[in-house]
Image (cartoon, rainbow, N blue to C red; front, side):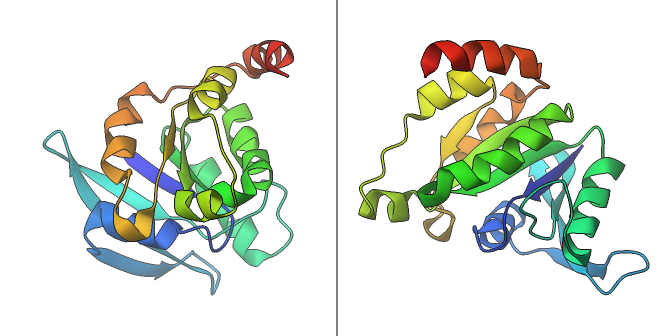
Amino acid sequence: MKILLMGHPNVGKSVFFNRLTGANVIESNYSGTTVDYTRGYMSLEGKEVEVVDVPGTFSLDPKDKAEEVAVAMLKEAKDAYVICVIDSSKLERGLYLALQIIEEGYSVIIALNMDDVAEDKNIEIDNQKLEQILGVPVVSTIAVENIGISNVISRLKDAKPVDVEDITARGVGAA
């Protein structure tokens, strides 16, 4: 089993990664590039699971070398689980990437990170409604305080590929 941590730059993916792996890391350059990524391992139900901190990307339509590497890493790991780490205070921007990954058929869980920042800005997110619309697990986290990380891990079993047409149908009634 492999878990990819994906999201925009500076949303807390690396902190999330360190919480999952205990900072047991291997830094590498992606083959043929100077773009680096980090991988490590965690134990899940007695099995060793590879966790990869993918370079930050805004979309699956790469605009620079780091984004090209992120997209290539995703495409090379078709059976991976993807934890989409989103800045809770910038939900709409983060959901664009998450929806692209969902459209590609990956098992996705959304970690709404920096929940405290969103709260400070009086941003309220109805995780249950978002989960209902998207059909993927949605969990609030504050990675720097280790809040919600265990919930993300326990919800991995609920992550599964979703039919995008189902999202559209559910979203129409929710608007």
